Amino acid sequence: MILATNNEGKLKEIKKILNEFDIISLKEASVYHEVEEDQDSFYGNASKKAREIYQITKTPTIADDSGICIDAFDGWPGVYSDRFLGSNATKEQRNQAILQKFIDTKVQDRTARVMCYLVYYDGTNEIVGIGELVGKIAFKPIGDRGFGFDDIFELENGLTLAQLTEEEKNQISARYLAAVDLKEKLKSLDKKYTFK
Image (cartoon, rainbow, N blue to C red):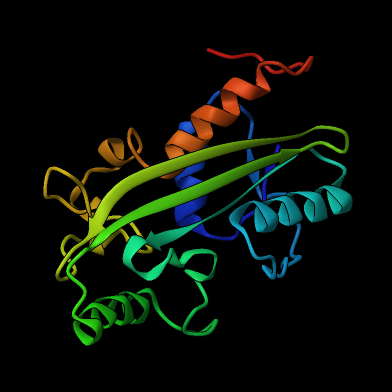
């Protein structure tokens, strides 16, 4: 299978979770096509990516889209998590913009959720795995592990995702939950895949 991403963090995380599959990256598949994420939902972007890469490679493809959804702001930034400041913004700039929004609006409710949609497409079957991790926005970035919004997403135990080890994060993350969901659904396919 091809994992339709150029994000090294996502690639490492998903390959570790779905280690029963022979998964290769876009680079390993010699695919240099960039899919434009212009849909209005996580599912829409993930499905578009999986289908476009499949059309190029004719190889079963998994694609994901994920982001952080803040309850007090009606799910913002949601599907625009990676691009609400533009495509050239750094993760630090995005995280600071989110923290600043709480200061500017004096909102007290900091509950949020990380959503992940993983879509498998093989030219015939489309299977969707969904994961959701509930927490809240921290008051400042804490931790030096992970990527994206990990250092401002606080769990019920008071730790941010960026304070967890890779193994700890991979047991609870929205991407892990989506991967488990996808794996269970893939078992229903009459395919050559074997599962541990």
